[in-house]
Image 1 (cartoon, helix red, strand yellow):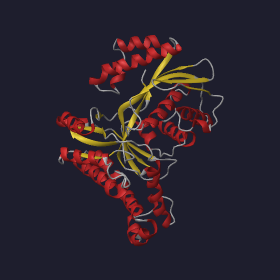
Image 2 (cartoon, rainbow, N blue to C red):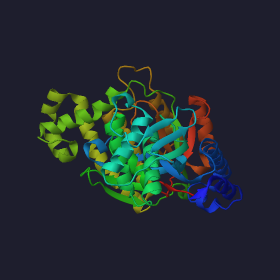
Image 3 (cartoon, rainbow, N blue to C red):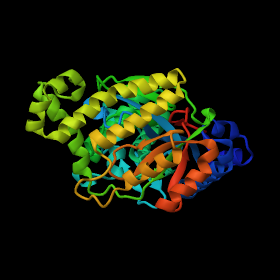
Image 4 (cartoon, rainbow, N blue to C red):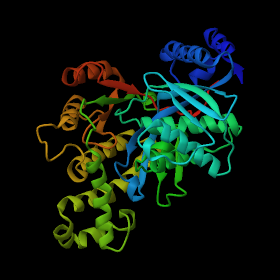
Length: 425
């Protein structure tokens, strides 16, 4: 490792530019350098001019497979260039300190890693759970000091919690295990901490996509050993920007709605003696549709119908990118969005029909694109964000257009980041 003051000098003198350009674009280089220097200065303030390293973990965007992972289906996801970054150094004791701008510092001892009910839904729980799991799996852990900030904002649909989990897991791998812990294991450790310590049910898609870098197809048929197929692909090089638009609606009080989707799918699978929809076929669903509608209701049937088609669609989307068939890919993206709207029904709440922000975003995005590109809901649905593939020549107009509906700063460009979660310097 290198002293903080030397890292600052290296960045300011341009000696780190090549490393940074593996992650960020040229036009954002100076602002990223300023961000890194600010983090390093903060680390020096808090912990002194010590030997340290810098870790970066990307956010992720779901590209295909809307609500398929929890029924052991296929997904398509990509790491993006919005990231979480930390400066980390070894502590002199068994203590961990994590400082994050705007939040109370996390402080804990690695001698006390058992789960605490009082820490549910907190960053403390995530850090404690990650360290517990590393130790339980026989990996080395130790005390460390860390300060971080994240561009992957909560509610952005880019998986802020998974990005932080992977950031800390990569830190522990680099500081104490010579960087030898594979990205799938880092992802699983993050998922464990989120499920068991933080108290939030989640599949593995978010963590894998944050950890892996690039575009990945993930098959969750065996959740303990997901099949991961990476591909390097740049929509930018093909003349399109992947845009995300915040439709300025809240995720608050939606837990029951999110839980209902996997539960209803699994209830349909249960009729056939199976645990998840991955284990049934569209032919079985069709043959039993009349009985299923009466027993479980129409929405459950439609959600299972969505899964069975969306699961195949995610595989087809990966194949379209592998063969560089962008028109076919866009057709599949649009079909995915339509299926989420009509069958999965995670675009707006039936109980609050006057609030349809996602619907409004999709309607006007479709009108703007007029068939040149694609758009769909991003992630969980009901609130949050939509994504759109916009021709590069029209990006500025798209931003102005969407801001006229949802307000200033609602849209941002996403670049697929091919560099995985990693030590930068």
